[in-house]
Amino acid sequence: MAKKAYPLRINEEILSAMQRWSDDELRSLNAQIEYVLRDALRKSGRSKPKVVEPIIDPQS
Image (cartoon, rainbow, N blue to C red; front, side, top):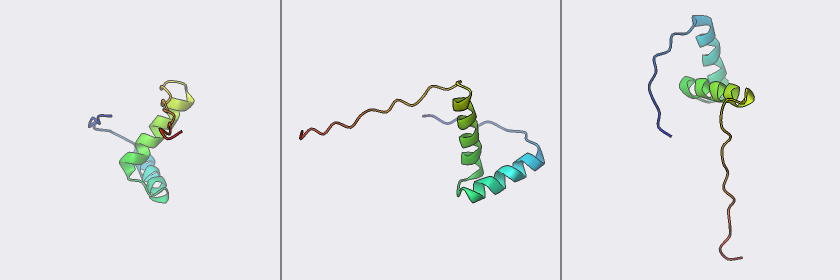
C-alpha cells in the first residue's frame, strides 16, 4: 500500500492526547493516527475488509 504525505492541522489538546496514547501503545504518533482513522472507517462500514487468503499446505 502506497503512503501519501498529508499536512494535518490539529487542535493542540487532541495532538497531545494522541501522543500520550501512541506512547502507551508503543506506536509512533503517525501510526496511532492511522490506526484510529482505520478503526473508525471499519466501524462505520466505510472501508473494505482485508481479504485473508487461507494457507494451503502443499504436503497434504
